[in-house]
Image (cartoon, rainbow, N blue to C red; front, side, top):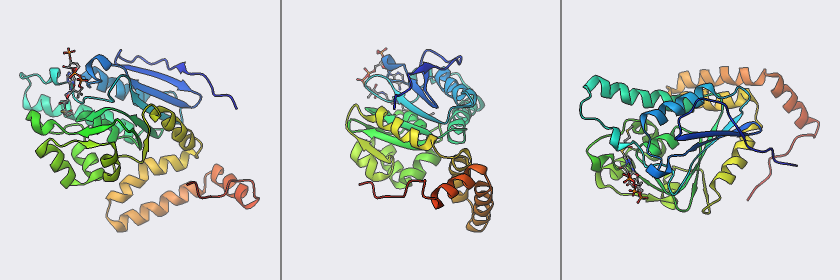
Length: 270
Ligand code: 1HE
């Protein structure tokens, strides 16, 4: 089978981002390596633009960073000292909006990480659905040392991934976690050798892209909300979502394919 070539995606994105597509899979890259992919306002707004306006036929997204590091987090040069409290709140809410567009967007997102994944860079990765780390990856939340706080959703998303005590340790002591420690803590679902992250992310994105749209919607939009709701409402929502999924024509076809021995079995992979 031939792999389709990468084509540009025509969206008005800042120079700190680049978007291409390989068939149904988009590849969004952080391309501000001279500043270690520090996330300034135009980049965060560009991320929001990408995830709200990417082409309808994109079925999965790979997110990665150019250069030596995935992302150095918030652009510290933009932390202005003349903003009012409300302007600072709105700035954080802008990050929340952009990252919500990822978490509750139209297509699942797989992040390939390497080098530093710190502060807002980890908040960005935490808003995606699958994380792959190369061995060079390390994680930190230097907000604690810079005298600031999380502002891009990390108190919710990173705390849910690794637990409040680990977030407190990273922030209070400046500790970093290496790729293996981050994996054991629950940041990543996959750990790969250096240079293999994007390839692995594409492989995983292709699998997610092959699911039905309804199932991916359920996994991205319903599952995390069910998991956060009280069990009684969660179970009802699960039944409703299951009904919608089962009634999709693709599900009918896929169940028939299995029963008529045309679909793959679930076999042990390792
Ligand atoms: C930056 C940033 C940045 C680099 N904002 N400009 N994040 C941090 O506290 C992490 C700060 N960065 C670092 O610790 C290091 O830069 C790295 C470990 C990530 C990379 O080190 P290195 O040796 O490869 O690069 P460098 O020489 O430190 O940086 C290269 C350039 O990028 C340099 O600029 P230059 O003009 O002197 O070349 C750096 O100043 C610049 N740079 N990181 C601005 N973060 C929504 S709330 C989220 C809150 C946070 O994310 S707090 C965490 C902030």
